[in-house]
Image (cartoon, rainbow, N blue to C red; front, top):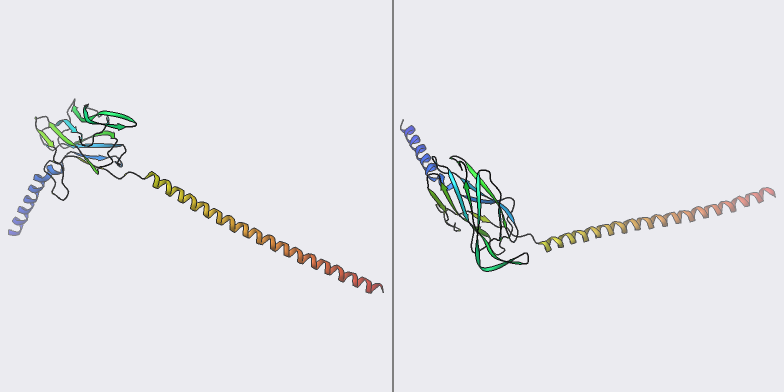
Length: 244
């Protein structure tokens, strides 16, 4: 009985830990579809789970990083949600496709026109964005999640390397290294040169084989001709002896 009580108490304690820690796993996050390469464009999904049992998420606001402004931000329409893109003037204009850009997207806000994100569910909000910075390994977005009971959860704490996860971590988009086009071209050229070398070697072998065959046939022809001459001489002698 004593062991059963201890086991039951342990189970209750474990359940309590899971319940208390579950919100840490239910934060707003961002993930790319494929890769998010530096200097390129990517489609990302902001994933918003509902962590309350008696209220729905009715508004999601994602603030874009000011230190790495993005000039091109296009949200994909999501049924049941109105979307608004807000832009702000840049302190320092940037260049994009040969043109100077003096403003960038500062935030995107989705507002539910129906029930929103109900308890026990989540919603993804796809966004195409770029050009991604070349001098950073990540982009940090700060998100605000508003519930139907007027609660607002601020997912704005930036995770620190080597530290425990914050209570309300901000969504972080990890960037990958851009593909080296010159390196790729060099590899293609090396492959082509290798193929050409192999072809040349095969052709040389074929030519050598052909030359050997021709020489062999020539020698055989000479031998056959010599044999024919010898046969003719011998046959002439025999006819002469027979006549005498």
